[in-house]
Length: 300
Image 1 (tube, rainbow, N blue to C red):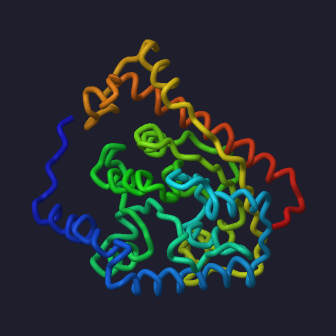
Image 2 (image 1 turned 60 degrees about the horizontal axis):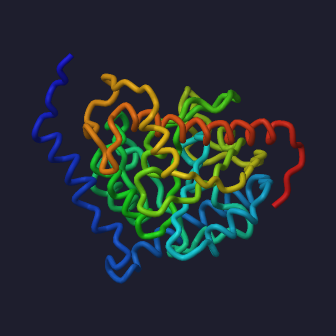
């Protein structure tokens, strides 16, 4: 079915609210002062609700600390987590001891364009907060994925929610979208990938609270668990070679993909590669989820 073209005025409005405001996310924008103010304020908010107004227990926090503070120069980091509420980020970084208010160390994060970038004011604030707009349903080769790739190219830290949407039920980790896998495969230096699974944020910010609406403010006196895994390292060259030998067929789900990647992978081979990486990540996340359900006492 042929898709209807997006009206010119809508497309222009979206672009002005997102792509054209990329300057606000630059480290040197107004000397970095607006970014520092926003990240300090948001970090303080996260610290208040995660460390003081709710009970939070973290397993293996030292691994996250080490990779954020002391990984090899130029080595990018991707953290991935399940998605339980609209406030998973920034609240998940608000546990005691973590540098939540440090603008230099703060993560970049992929954020839904239709929620976080709906107008110029929101766009400016979220850009200052090191958020990159992603159009849901826009595909893994959409324009702003190149901005995420730039973060990794510069050795930065990027957080993603590869499930693609919020799920507040206690169910196995769902099939992951391929956007994160494509970034891992396309980055000039293969990122370290750190899986994180949490629970409890769905009780801090439930989707249906009163009158089937979210509460105006996060709830308190809830129990939160954050389980940090061990970093995954992917041998992308070996996976690419294997992808070339696999019997793969392209499908209509590859709309907008290049016919071949810069390293010569066909669309079918790219699909196999991204599916393989995603499945490996998902399997680890599911093990962490099961571990978190079984563990009664977790400590920072």
